[in-house]
Length: 155
Ligand code: ATP
Ligand code: MG
Image: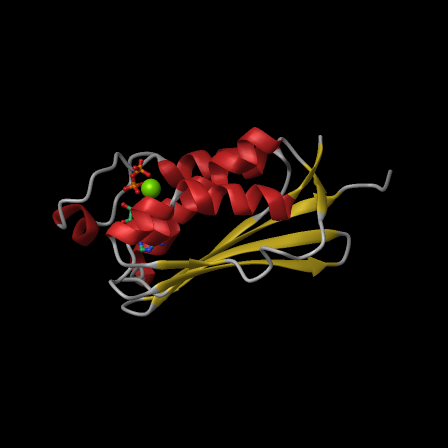
């Protein structure tokens, strides 16, 4: 299905405004008023994946921090990035974060709700689209998740 990813991200940001405020984090999408960008994907699933990533960026963010969302053109695809200035993930733990029920100890001991399924669902959705997802993180500084989507063919 063909849809405008700009609109979808605006909707995701709106649904997380309360949570962001509570954690004193700003979710910044500087392309909020940009011209439409059409992708070809399952809209409901991509919405879910984006919510899971944005929720994580808030839950594991730092007070006063920011989450940046960006859409970039990459050949015949778009790259969607969710980047936070949060607690980060230690290098040793990075390979396991897409596993079901996997949670990094420190964040669990922060008494943060969750079951460790959010990222497994994101990975499942992106895999089902035959797209790729990447994570990079610097412990103590922040984390960036990015995944690709196919451009929609015109008309
Ligand atoms: P759920 O999403 O099911 O409510 P969860 O957030 O613990 O629970 P995931 O979203 O799968 O589960 O994330 C797995 C673990 O990866 C988290 O427990 C956390 O330790 C770590 N993590 C995920 N996203 C981030 C992030 N943006 N910054 C730092 N750590 C993160
Ligand atoms: Mg989560």
